Length: 360
Image (tube, rainbow, N blue to C red; front, side, top):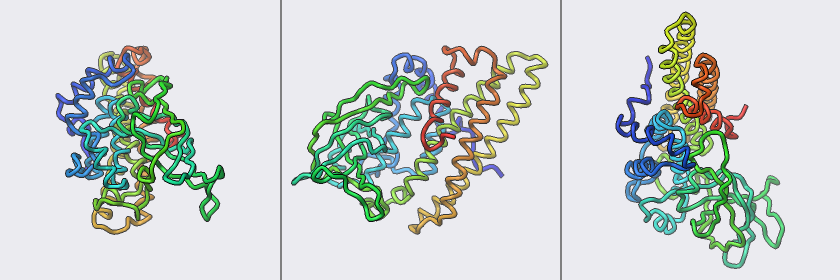
């Protein structure tokens, strides 16, 4: 029995209309449209993981995944920004409580950042001296704070862990402490504003450092005990499945309008791809639900369950890619027209699949 419904059943249709109708203009603006941002702030989607006492929604992971998939079905750039920025706000579970209180006092708090260790943090008497530049910070145009990984140095020398790996730590920086470099120039996900940012000789206190570790959690909520790798895999996977489902819907509309013998053959591919992706979605959400139930019961999630989550995430992305690449040739030149929604969905999809987690 299927357990998962189409994304159109998750969000109010008026909400979807606001987001989708502004998508073309947002792309031309190269940033999210004010109407889209207003909806994001109104719904508090950037704070889906955040505890209610800090102004968040405090949702479960399965709830968050359904919202993100539905947002991707509505508009890829909106969903990607919400996913990456709300995912970075997940760090509240590991921040110094005093710092978190200060940061989340802003009703429009928005986290952006990078997991790449392309900066350095020199140990000083009272903290760290930060230098570096980081790429692909989705939501950088709206961000109130940035997070960035840095290689830790002392007396000009790199520090190493016992296993020989370099010591790397994430830091939190305020918007007025960084410089955003408008470098994002992709064919898709244009409105995400996934620009670079840099800092030069920035002095930070030890309070600004945090550690993503199950033993470093400062908030008692199961979502902060869920492993970061599987959190990233699942949230990005539903962005791609949401985009693929929208591509499937639009392909079906185009093919039905043709009403030829060729289109009848094409419809067989549409139906087959629809069945396959929904089978993958069903398996994915089952794996997520099992692991989430283990996490919710305050016990360690069995490794086998986490492996199933990772496997199901990658399988869902693979099937999403197969769907888009199979149906695209059946849609004709309308799918190549950059003014059409189906082309924007195609470009968004093939940009998002270049994320390091899912590159072939």
